[in-house]
Image 1 (cartoon, rainbow over the protein chains, first blue to last red):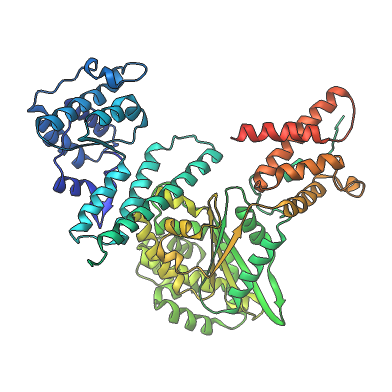
Image 2: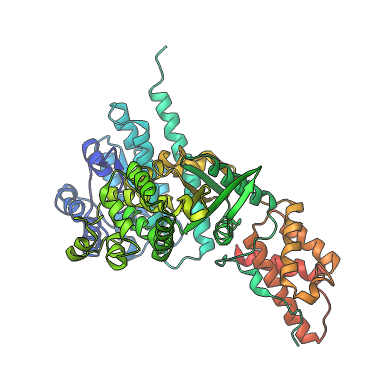
Length: 211
Length: 372
């Protein structure tokens, strides 16, 4: 959420696009986390408020498990501790949504630890649960919006650059050495080029003439 | 015992304000050619330096900023001079034009503006300057502020910083401060015209070089902020006929201009006329760099004795081999490490033997491993 809140597609928040095109849901534990981030000033008040009031409610109306024991088959290595409560409840929420109705669930995270913990395996066994990094999520939204002829390629590229910038700001540790920062900057520039190339090709396909 | 007796400050990995620049003759020539080329044209020009982190771009900027570029001629044409202004790149955060303006103003310094204005007045070119200034800025207040620099120093300075009182504005004869980013871009045009006015260079054509370093940091910034900044930057740049902007961008694959352009906005890319690539040096370039470096390291009396001191011939050969393809910053750090480690060994042994290939390899490799 923190990474997505500053990303814009053609002057409009990417989360607005998400609201228009997807059903958003938050578990109680995620909502508590949102609350803490809101107090800590990391999350914009308006966005945080919505997640606390609206999307938490969506999850609350359902009986969702929140124990990790049932997820054991997906969990490699050490069992998740208290710090992973959010991931555990989100995993159960994803399972519930993808099985109670034939509904595709997208879990958005840039946290590699969470993916390795069990999300990647969960996704292997519950095909309707997909795990997206914020960049892929933004790209999917951009393409969705573009298919409706609402946004042009330069706006799509800008949205991806915003995502990379937000990810960079949120993942750069303070006190990093100059050499490490240069290395990170190189990786981000490379990633930006790859993402831009992908979206350009996708646009070409979308706009290719029918023969 | 001071074993090697070397000037180790030469091995700084961060360039000082007035550095020497060893080796890199081709890059030096390319920059000089691009600068002279930009002086021939009375229009805004843009140059970009592309190279890996530590390849020498900032060093080049500081070298050219410190180098007096006055009254030189090329191919029979005389030039008045170049005023260099060096700016560190945007940091993480929002790149506002107001912040940029104040950094440029601080880099120029009020004293330099006052001297330039005084020279225009004493050379009797005030009317001509004011006419040109008005044509370029279309703003009476810019004219009035610049005119007041020599006579009303404090109020003029306050206005230029956007912090004037009503009384100070009345003293100068203007009614507003330059608070908006558009007004600042007008003011910047005026300041650069003042610095590049021919009377400051014996009536010959002169130019302002604006070095903007570390533009790779734009990757950390929001597009909307970058767009807003570049819009004002463009307004100022497009109307500053005597300004050459030199952008610097660090990337590990410096020849990939497309990837670099993907980070810069099109507003900047479209204004670049010359690209100078600081590629990874081959063996020949590395050797010439190291020879220059070791000459500067040795004290005067040692310089004539042995060009490769404090290395043996085979030690130097090994050093060239290992340093080839590395950036100057890496090479400097490795050479410093080798010398310091070798010095410590000599102190313990009580000898003064030169550094051989075995020591070079051992210390260079450990320095590289630590850097990774």
